[in-house]
Length: 211
Ligand SMILES: N[C@@H](CCC(=O)N[C@@H](CS)C(=O)NCC(=O)O)C(=O)O
Image 1 (cartoon, rainbow, N blue to C red):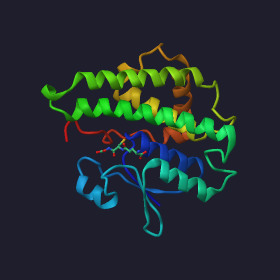
Image 2: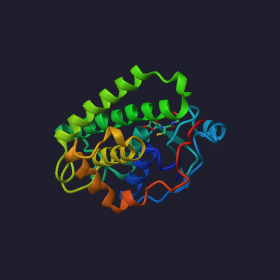
Image 3: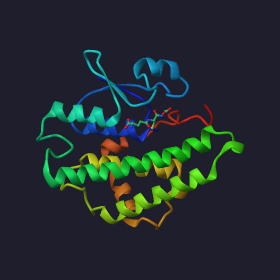
Image 4: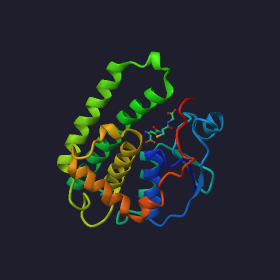
């Protein structure tokens, strides 16, 4: 399998961490979604990352769909989302909040990086920041002192962990020290895990200042 995308993307990192936790080997294609946009569109018509190229050449796109396939491959006892019931609903709720928060943070980061300064629309940035803060507040109140679903690191933990790392590195002012204490502890705990450490973005895995 080949995972396409750089680790500065929380969605790519999310897939890589899941593959690592499940012991599924993969190679990486670290082409940039911005510098190699045309090549990326040949892999995924949307020109987005992550994509996962399976051994038979089939290409899966979108982290949620990729992770759904990975869970199916390993079967319900090893899957990183519980198969049913309250535990599944809780997992999907946390994933939805954390991935929605990445979308809001990403919108702010893209607006700042890609738009000419005179075209930046501050009310849009303010709205995104408010939505992000509200999601972080909710997640701070929900975060456990260990992992969400017991002793095992699973998809809600991974999604929340990669989202917090992204914030810390790309929009730290939206995650100021002391405002979300449970999330700070959660992020530190995640980044101590080997699967998280192996997927830290390399220095050249950074979105360009303009595209
Ligand atoms: N819902 C998608 C979101 C993927 C996404 O937003 N990828 C970003 C990188 S973090 C991307 O490809 N951005 C380039 C673009 O959209 O032009 C997923 O979960 O995979």
